[in-house]
Image 1 (cartoon, chains in turn brown, blue):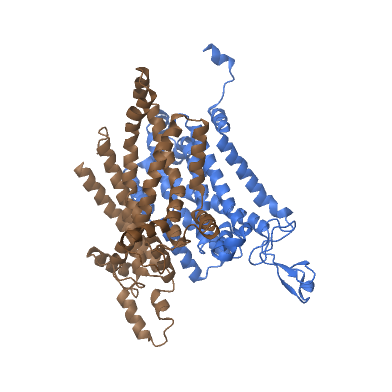
Image 2 (cartoon, chains in turn cyan, blue; image 1 turned 60 degrees about the horizontal axis):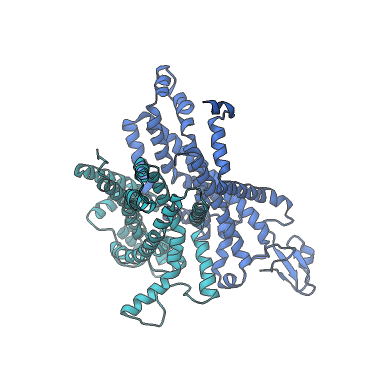
Length: 322
Length: 318
C-alpha cells in the first residue's frame, strides 16, 4: 500500500512536469503581453523600463529558457507575483480558493443529500415511472447550460420577483459582522448554489443508481431476499452498505475539485472566488497567476484520482494494490 | 429449446435495436435530434430572411423594410427595427440589432451541430488510434501514451480554451478560420478519455482466443487492430461519442457566451443567449434570449438520452 502510494505520487510528478511545460508554452504563445497592456495608458514609461519589467517577469527569454527559470523558482516555492494584484500568486489563490470552496462545498453537500436517496429510489424500481422521472431530471440537469440557467434564475427570482439578490456576495452599504454577515452571504449564495446543485446533481444520481443496480443484482442480495428479510432490511442493510464503497471513493475523489472554482457561475453572480479571478486574469493576461492557477487545477485533479484510488483500497479489502 | 424454435432468431444487432427502441427517453432524444437537424439544415431554405439581414421600420407608415431595399431606406423616418415583438412576420421577434431571431436560431443550431460532430470526429480519430496502439502493444509504448493521457487529462479544459480563444482574438485570426482552430484545439484537449477507454477494451480483447488465432495466422498489426479488435470496441465508442457530442455543444455555447467562441459573422446559440447580459433584455425581451437557451438544452439533452439508451441497449446487464 505504502509502496503503491509512493509510486503513484512519483508518476504524478512526472505528469505534472509534462503539464507544466505544455501550459507554460501555451501561455507564452499568447500575444500582447501584460507589460504592453499595463503600460499602454502611460506614455511616460520608456522602452527601457518596459524591458526591465519583462526581465522581472521572465518574459524576455525563450520558451524553454523561461520554463527552466519558472520551474526552478517554483520548486523553491516562488510562483511569482500576480500582475494585477501585486501580491504573491500563492497568496491570492490561497485567499480566493476558500470563497470558491465554501460555495462549492455547500452545493456538494446538498447534492449528496438529494442524490443518494433519489438514486437508490430509482434503482429499486428499475424502468418504473419513478425511475424514468428521476433519470429524466438527472439528464436534464447535466444538459443545462449553466450560464443560461443562471440567467433564468436571475430573471425569475431577482429581477422578476425581487426575492433574492441579482449578484454579489454581500449587501452593499450594510456593514454586517459576525452571524449577520454569514446570513447575508448565505442569502447571496442561494442562486449560485442552486445552479451548482441542478447542473451537478445528475452525475451523482446516475452514479448512485448504477452502483445500486449492480449491488441489487448481486447474489448476496438474492440470498438476503430468499431468507425472507423484509425489503427495507435488504436494501438498507445489505445493499446500501455495499454501494457505500464506490460512493465514498467518489466523494473523496471529488473533494479536491471543490477548491477549483467555477468560472461561469462565479463570473455571472460576481462572486469573488478563484473562477472569477481566473476569468479576469485571462482578460488581463496575468501570466504568473494563470500559470499557477492552471497548475493548481492540475494538482487538484491528480490529487482527486489519487485519493479515490486509495480510498477504494481502504474501503474494499478485496482490492489489492500492485 | 422448443420455445426458441418458435421465435424468430435475432442477430445481436437486432437485439440491441429492439432494446434501444423500448427506451422511451432514447426515442424522444432521437426525435428531437431529427427535428433539430431538419430545422437547422432544411429550415433556412424556407426562411424568407438571411442570417445577417437587418430590418428597418418606417416610423411614419409602420412599414417594415429589409436592409437590401436600399431605395426605401433613404426615406425619412426610417430606423432599425430592434427588439420587435413576436409577430406573424417575425415568429420570435427581432434582436437588439434588428435581425430575425427565428432565422438566426436555425443558423445558430446548424453551426452548433456541425461543430459538435467535427470535434467528436477529431477526438475519436486521435483517441481511438492512440488507445488502440497503447492497448495492443503494451509495455513501454503503453506507458508513454498513458502518461500523455494523464497530462491531457489534467489540463483544466475550460480555462485553457478561454486562453486559446483569447489568444486567437488578439492574434487577429479571421472568425471564419477561428471555428476550425477551435474544433482542432477542442479535439486535442479531449482525446484522453477516449484513448483511456479504448485501451482498456483492447487489453481485454487482446487476451481472447480469436486474437491468438489472428496472430497465429500471421495477420498484419493494422489488420488485427482494425478488423478484429476495434469492431468489438465499437459499442463503447459509440456511446462515448454520443455523450461527448452533447458535451461539446455545451462547451462551445459556453465559450461563445463568454465572448471568445464563434463570433460574428456566425449566429451562434451561446452568442444569442449572451444578449441577456443587458438588463433591459433580460427583463423585457424573453423572446430574444430564452429560445436559444432552450434550444441548446434540447439538443444536449437529446444526445444524452440517446447515449444513455445506447449504453443500456448494448449492455443489458446493467
